Image (cartoon, rainbow over all chains, first blue to last red; front, side):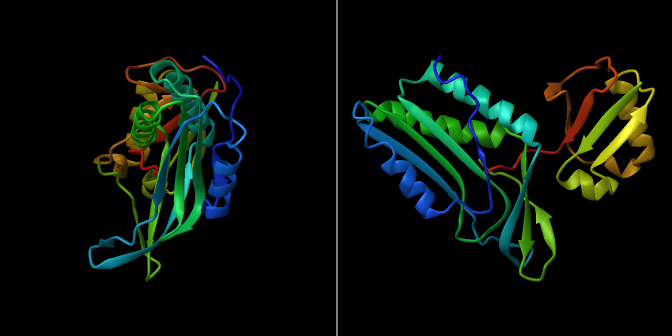
Length: 148
Length: 77
């Protein structure tokens, strides 16, 4: 297992395209990498009971979520042949069309990156204590439920 | 003996609180009984309990200072 140190996962507000671009650029020095797989979760303008979602206000049990993310990280390096990985998730308000989840996996060859990326996203959705309050255009809200 | 209780997501709406300190609760079963008694509206809501950030699936003895979290279904991403 590599990379024992804790990584900063949560970002206040939306994850900006510039942050994602910078993350990609920072890998140009890691020339053993041949493949990157990136998953971006974007806030969707769902219609729920006739009301349109305007934004999601994310909250988390941060201490437990960070421990879970660390466990996921440890497992990924055991399960898949990857070089490095980064996970970022928003806290607070993210508007429709903005990015709230950024999973970035790099490997020598594409299979490791693709497989690990999907597995990580599924694990985050199932195992990490994060919640989203879907706020509608009329200021009312409902609590987000994840679909498969 | 004092424990700390944290509630998240829709459970904050259901109970009207996100943090509580409770005294003399011996184990998680006792805590659940007290919570359902104090907040009958919790019935019908899905949640799991974590003691010190670890999910607890059966009755567990609580110790001074333990943080017990009530966690509704996760919805990250």
